[in-house]
Length: 124
Ligand SMILES: [Zn+2]
Image (cartoon, rainbow, N blue to C red; front, top):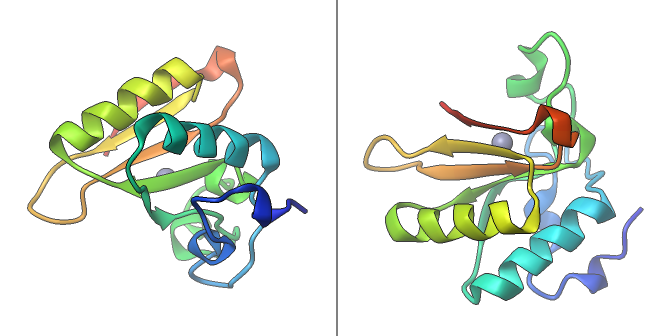
């Protein structure tokens, strides 16, 4: 369990699984996310944090992704804001970066912490 008081820019509820309400975010990830927020200096809108393996998106996968490990989140952003988030995320050592920047609404950037030898950037 992590101490949510350590993260002045985030609330636990922002990271609760939207399907089950569970939350097992990891300190390693939240520490880095708070550092990202501090460096950027603007609010980060979290659209997905922790996900149970029973969350509809995860249930479709052969095995749970990084959200089910508490090592990922999705951040609502576009254009120049997306650029800044990705730039600083790379500098801070986030190892999984997913880019969803299509359409008029719903654009986001996914960040995770996977093993360095599996680091990647992907699109949706
Ligand atoms: Zn994601």
